[in-house]
Image 1 (cartoon, protein in one colour):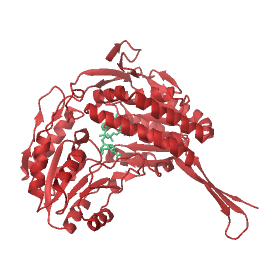
Image 2 (tube, rainbow, N blue to C red):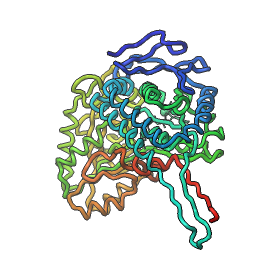
Image 3 (tube, rainbow, N blue to C red):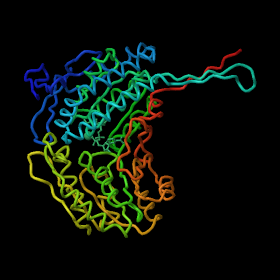
Amino acid sequence: MIRRIEGGGDPSPAVLVVGQVRAPSQLLIGGAWTPSTSGRSLAVHDPSTGGLLATVADAGTHDAVAALDAAASAQPAWAATPRRERSEVLRRAYEAVVAHADDLATLISLEMGKPLAEARAEVAYGAEFLRWFSQEAERVAGHAGPAPDGRGRSLVSRQPVGPAYLVTPWNFPLAMPTRKLGAALAAGCTCIVKPAELTPLTTLALAGLLGEAGVPAGVVNVVTTSDPGAVTDALVADPRLRKLSFTGSTTVGRHLVSASSAQLLRLSLELGGNAPFLVFADADVPAAVQGAVAAKMRNAGQACTAANRFLVHEGVADRFTELLAARLGAMTVGRGLEEGTEVGPLISAAAVARVAGLVDASVAGGAEVVVGGTALAGPGSFYAPTVLTSVPADAAVMREEVFGPVAPVTTFRDDDEALALANGTSYGLAAYAYTRDLDRALRVVDALEVGMVGVNQGTVSSAAAPFGGIKHSGYGREGGAEGIHEYLQVKYAAVAS
Ligand code: NAP
Ligand code: MG
């Protein structure tokens, strides 16, 4: 079912085919699979084994500009395509992704490492953005009315902002592109997608399916590269580009704010997080533990919305910690494709070393390991599910994004202290709160300085809801009624009558 085709085409000698899904090895420019002008290629590895999966074209700045040429030429016709037609293309794209769900899930698991069940959940979640925005495409509203002084009328309409550059991370190689593409295509924007170097295959496969679903040539272009800085600089300097949507680290996001200032690009930034997971004294503790496992362990903790710090009322902390440690300690760690695997590898050996460094430093600072606390033997880059207690509030594991299967637990005495700890970070993406008191829940939702709160649940993501952060977690929203507006601009006409 999984085949590697050697000699798949210079400069990309190895193409991966999974069942009915093929991950092309070249750049998608103007509807044609195109070799990179650099002649270079980049290798894609399986983090579960370290083995080579495929090689894909490594774009340079010339290729990026060619992709923008294609996107800019396709822009007028795509903007003029009736919304219902754009809607129907997205609907067919949704159906194509769902029809290939198992093969796409295998591909995600191969290049990214997550367990197959999670990869299937990512395909279902990612496909929902295509369905959601297929519906939103028809509902972009304007308004018209008489001017207040009775002289003339105002007409307000919304238009696509223009060619958009979509930069995605490696942790959700299908859902991050669809979350951006769904909104951009529905709004009438043409796109250049730049997936992460570590996981380009799923995006390439997705682009193939979008073409089959009827996305016209040049409307979606894909550029894979080992030099994202140079490719991005070339694109954001070009006045034809009008929009940049980025999901990734706060460091790169901050750089993009300044890099895009010359052309005053419209920006959407989905950046890092440091989500607090609050368990109040009146919480249903077993339910909180179940939510904690979901919020912490999805993608082995490699999610921007991952619970990063567990803040637990001192009256229930021992029980919560004991149950959480029992659950995490019993999880099966292994290759994502193997039946029964609950926790896959981290994305790289460097990621394992970084997580180990955070755990070791917190232990040196006084934290105690309840379970885990070590890297696991390879091949592949694995770290054991870990629970830490008595973690000092200023430990790096509490302040930095862990991006691994590590749950540091600390206690609080009252709601004020809980909220002060929760908000004591420069990030503001997600938070979770467990309490059976509705008044408390609503007070906490109001007081938390984040874009999203899970109340008595450990997941927040939904295509129908606005995903995004505040503070150093960025700005802009993806999904929900808000998502399409990131790709639309308002026009007003004053009409004498
Ligand atoms: P990253 O290094 O910032 O990479 C994200 C993307 O940006 C990749 O495609 C990367 O390409 C590219 N990139 C790197 N340097 C660039 C530059 N100078 N100009 C333009 N693009 C550049 O982040 P990561 O470590 O891969 O991903 C994890 C981060 O993403 C975490 O902080 C996580 O919280 C965040 N994240 C946020 C969300 C959200 O919605 N808020 C969702 C998922 C992840 P290469 O891969 O080739 O380096
Ligand atoms: Mg990177």
